[in-house]
Structures are given as structure tokens and as C-alpha cells.
Image 1 (cartoon, rainbow, N blue to C red):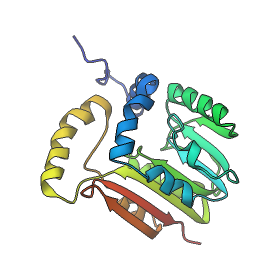
Image 2 (image 1 turned 180 degrees about the vertical axis):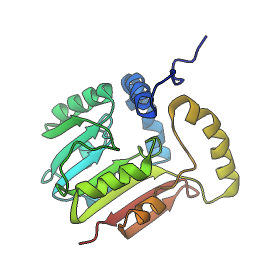
Image 3 (image 1 turned 45 degrees about the vertical axis):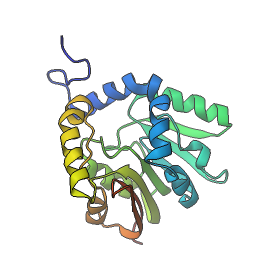
Image 4 (image 1 turned 60 degrees about the vertical axis):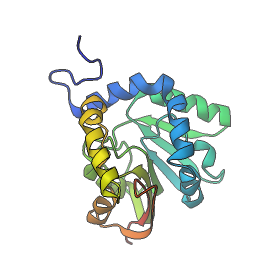
Length: 215
């Protein structure tokens, strides 16, 4: 039997990601709860404390960051998966939050240049096929002086853990396009951002990045 998550002949990496996340949408919230408590504890609060003005969340998923955003910001979310976006819409309605939710690709954001004061991306660049292109797009849509806030799992600073991550990737990249040995910080620097704040946690497997687009 063929694996339903494996890539179909002629399927692009982006199309595969859409299919994988559409399939995951109904159970994603239940599956991520434990990891959020143990691995990523405090990460969403960290993001919410630093946003300002017009906020774009790239790969908003099911909208799990929405409860942590201040009420005085204007929210836009872009998500590749229509099924994940449907869950995000329900969450926004339940919270009474007005959010402009758009279907779109992180590598080609459906947003005007210099139109946001803050861009957030959480637990998503690990599976974007071309993360450098996505970060370039985030830079494009930010105003000069705008903030980039990232939260993700990255390659560990501890060699035994990093080796285990590499082994895990032998399965996760093929199944879901998810990487555990990436690190976004060098890509942020290469895109021309000024680094304001970096935190690494959990044997270096979790990284929070606050950067600014130069004026």
C-alpha cells in the first residue's frame, strides 16, 4: 500500500505541504497541546508581548496565537491549508477577534510591500520548502523599522540531540516535509535584518528571534 502522506508523482513541495496540513487540521490542536506545554512553553506569550500595530502572522495554522495578541493590534493571517484556515476562522469567532484571514503561500505572500509593522511566524519555517524565500517575503511586507518575530524548533546545540534530530528527519522530511536540523537565524541575518533578541531553550532545540528591518 502507498503512504498517503508521501509525495505524488509531479506534486510540488508546496502542494504536498497543503495536502499534509489539510489532513492534519482536524487533530492538530489536540496533538500540539503536549508539545506546547513541554517544549514550547511560554513561546506564544513571548510573541504576543512583542507585537505592535498592523500584525501579519505567516502560516497562522489553526490560530493558536490569537489569544495572546493584544486587543489594540490589527491582525492579518496567511495560511496555505484551507482546512487549517477554517479552524482559525472558528477560533477567531469564538474569541471575538476580527482577523483578516487569507489563503496563501509563505513564499509568495498575498500582501502589499511595506504594509505591516510586525510579522510573526511560529512553528512553521521548519516545513516551508524554501525558508529563505519566505523570510525575504516577510522582509518585503514589513515597513522600515518593522519587527520580525520567529518561534521554531531548530538544530540542537548538543551533538547527541542533534544526531537524533538528523535521524528523525529521515522520516519526517519524507512524510511531511518537516526539518529538525534547520536554523532560521542565519537566514534572517542574510536577509538584512538587524537582530534585537535571540533566546535558545531546551538544549538549543527551540529558538525565539526578534529582529528589525532596517530603516
